[in-house]
Length: 259
Image (tube, rainbow, N blue to C red; front, side, top):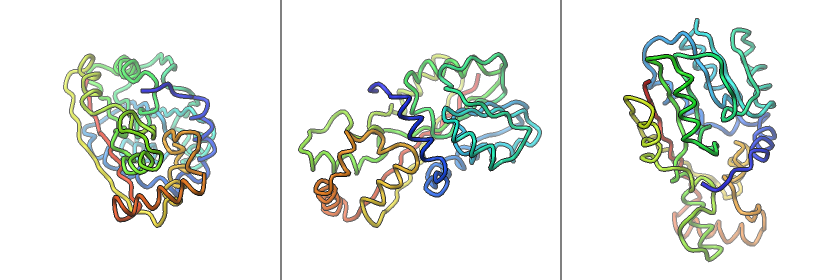
């Protein structure tokens, strides 16, 4: 995957924090699906990329007596989550989980729709393994490379670009089997399930607004080029010609890996 600008990711998610919950219905649906995969009691939990706390709340409701620690790279996101949950028993941290050194171990390390933003996913997964107690579980969801495939396709047509690579950042996210390989190098039993969500939008601007408000800024659109009115109109016409409407696919992978 191309190099990530962590500072930009922090800025984007911090700007999005106040309105994130209004637009993040897809991320919330994936969180619900991830929680449904969890089985058994857990006494200690570490959540990576807690955002505004939707999944954190689900974890607290499921594991009412567990020691729960949640971190996010954006201080503004953590501020919103802390204010929303108002639970002194949850320890919130502002930290980049890729570089965070933990001096404790957990029964469950979990993350919803965050690990796709990591520069070194394989290294991060090994860190997650090291943060687990024996018999512990790593449970996470990530968005896959088919996410926003329609936008990428229409943008390529509008710009006259060949297929390959990814004009939209999500198109460069790792494939399911590649992530499974990473996990199998450290973990025992590994399972994965796909969760595909498709949405229709009244206009291209509505789709771009949703992407912007959930922090991804188009997943890495080149130079904010779609703000140009002529290109915006051309891409919207291509959506109609290619798909009959403005739509978006969200491809999510739900992984469980046992230590």
